[in-house]
Length: 348
Length: 206
Image 1 (cartoon, each protein chain N blue to C red):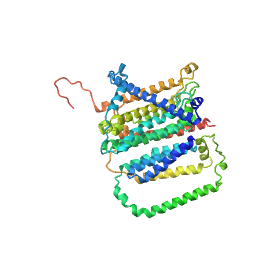
Image 2: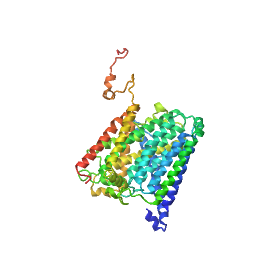
Image 3: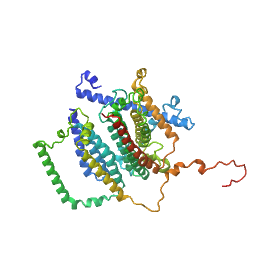
Image 4: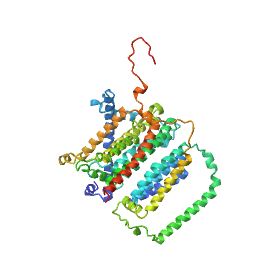
């Protein structure tokens, strides 16, 4: 895109700057729209699982429900508790929201369509997702209220625990793809199985960790069945208890942007990203971005399905699953995958 | 141009937030400023082309170490008045440390301007580092060839530290009842409930 702006007669710096800003807007604005629609879709899905109707009043089939909700919170008064730490209280939702958008910079939407094609893309995603916990922790502390604080403590413990096994899972994929570049990982899946299926997940050695990654990503985004941070029976509303109006909405948006990001990561790492499912020429007529979105939506359906049907974990079960089940298995899997690749001469 | 502007932005924020770490009255604010400093230092690393180190800095220090730090500082009940009372007592020691640090900085800059010391690092290892090879490959090639023993020693030391920490803190407490996960998982609905087709108007035998 930089070269396009250069043809308009800008200097290189100006063109680069304009192109980057345009790229950020091109990702962030549709993402916000997608979040609004995905919240609607998820409410409809939960309703269907519970034999209810779901939102059906605002707009045709209730499509505009999320926008009506957004308008409503926008018009509400922002209440800041007098005992809270004012600055941090307001910064916390902004951190959550910004961090949720930042990671999208390295996600390839189609072949070569990526804002920043860096060598350490996967590490960047890991780094940014590890920042996400700060929004929750700061919110919990700055509220100066006991339930948000409990929630912040839980969130910190939970996210650190699951990041460890996520790190090992990513290493397995990186070993197979031979690169940390996100686009390179997608390209590595081209004709991976039997020479025509474009996905790592059908690889018998990688399928177990694909399942583990799906579960870990639910824990990482603190979604049901791992939503211990906002368990309403124990913690009122968790770290969001003291929040109202736009600050609350920013948490909400950031959370769903994170969920979409985790769906996208699942798709990129194990289900072939923007590639069609099968390496067959006519399927490439459909643009890569369509395949990518369809796969993300299918993944999101699984997320909504799990949230609608699986009861919440107990806290000790959550920690046990992270440290005593996922960590040993993923560590063993790194040995297994690297041993297999070494044995078959993959690295030669 | 872009690099220069970014460098000055990152460098200014690093120094300003490092100063705020000291000047902030609330220890939690100090930790948060420290995180800002780490994050912008990572930006500086990216600028000199060390993207792998930058990402490690964020993942390890910001993502893990600082979270635990924050965790502990938030839970501590710190008396600020008492903290400030110790200031006068510690001034001589602090001044001494500051002088030593300034001396080291001057020495370091002087040594740097005198020219590079030939330690025989990269060129002797057989792995030549060029601008086209990604950071990770270059560092990996060095770590797993020339410095493999040092690397493994570092891992061993960390393992010993981990075992040591567990040995020091793990106490077998009496009277606690742990969860038996396998018996919980194997439990079925019919173990706890039974369906009874009870005639109307009669009590149930339990």
